[in-house]
Length: 596
Ligand code: 0FV
Ligand code: MN
Ligand code: MN
Ligand code: MN
Ligand code: MN
Image (cartoon, rainbow, N blue to C red; front, side):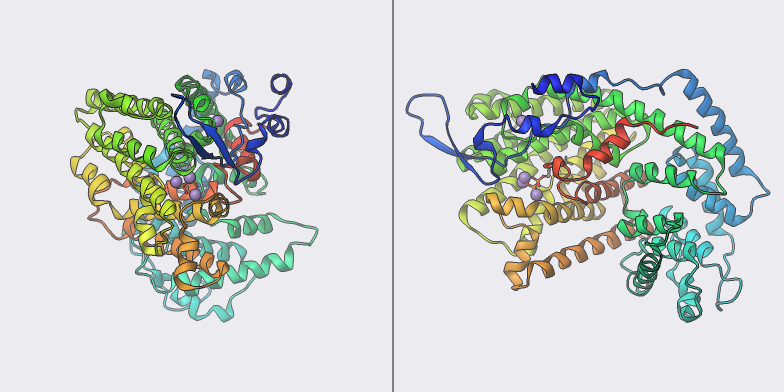
């Protein structure tokens, strides 16, 4: 019945209600303990196994394979490339004012096409930074809040250290401020998210002021008939600031928004739509590949308790790197994500402590000859990781002439050790304090493993120093991004985790340690996330001695953005059926933007 439904359905994702009523009864309650005998010999004891009640995949493999896009044809690419030439000319046009040029760059970035013009944009912003900038001492007619804030944000995004003092004149005279200047306020609000830990005014005074003003604006305008673009833009910005937003999602939204603007450039709009649809078609082919790979591993079939989430695992990678030419990075990182998700479930849900110790030892020993020492159900999983790591290592040895396998396998051993620590804490009833928890939890969230694989596949020139920084010393921007991922995950997944039994997560550790309420603990965790962003911004804007290449650093920050996207409205990774993630996935991976 369910399969007929899938075949006949125009939707790519499954009808979850039809599917879920066919699940065995034992899987229908979050914290059920399921008794299951491990088969092997007749004397083996009955082991109590748990279930997280994760639902089957919402996406049907055969449907994925049948997806066809109209936007891969040579004609689309030719048309897009013609438009691209026009945009290059616009960037070069000497008749445009400075503000118009900045606004064009902002539009290109938000429309998701700035990757075509990286050199041109860098030239313009470098020039802007080095030319004498005006020093505003007075808030007068010439002080343009929007222009000042836009320039500030664009320059800081690019890594230039513009001082926060550019807003002093404005803030000192904010009493005179015309509260109808929504574009100024919005630009100020977005700029305030580029704050670093050495800024004193941006976070507190400026962001609070702009946020409050924007909230007032929404309150007074939201129920008026003319629900204008302004209101939509403010609501969107308050929902998640641009600097924290997953890039492609911002793009998809902004293309619609831009289309409604009276002063839009229709050529630019057409270019952005064509490019979006073209990139989407590229994603679809990658998805077909990873979905086939995932089926062939046999893991979802064998480990029925684990999350079967290949589409979601792929979606994560588009948040980390969106440009079409990085398909290889996305393919490999999807595999890494899928394996991490499966192994996390082995530790958190299914394995006994004795089995988990054997599993951890297997990753530390990295010896395929000792495969049979593992419980049966762990062998395939270990071997798939082992083979994938060797495959990646083999390609890199061939193409980049460096053996990265020792670094990759260390990262798997490290994450498994961190998973085991949590399992032992839980089993032993140990309650760590927040600091002790975080020391382990920023590794158990799996980002350090992700970063070292990503770096190896993504960067053209690999440096042993960077590899060591990523796997041994731990670099600050990577640590901060992992913190954001961990904390964003805990804010959403910990209620279910506590219900089925797990180590205390950040919120509960803090409550236990300080005696505060859950609400206060959540606020504390949100504050930690803000601080991590300030640190990451600092690394990017002020730490020019960082070893981490700039383009890689951006993908590291993107993982933090992506986790804030996946966990914004529920657990988009584990329980996509209870979050808004499917709409996001549909709009980014499957629904093309209609052309005019
Ligand atoms: C998060 O789930 C999760 F799936 C992780 C950390 C592994 C995969 C990573 C990516 C797909 C990027 P969960 O809440 O179960 O993680 P914890 O660490 O809380 O068990
Ligand atoms: Mn499954
Ligand atoms: Mn887990
Ligand atoms: Mn876990
Ligand atoms: Mn979790």
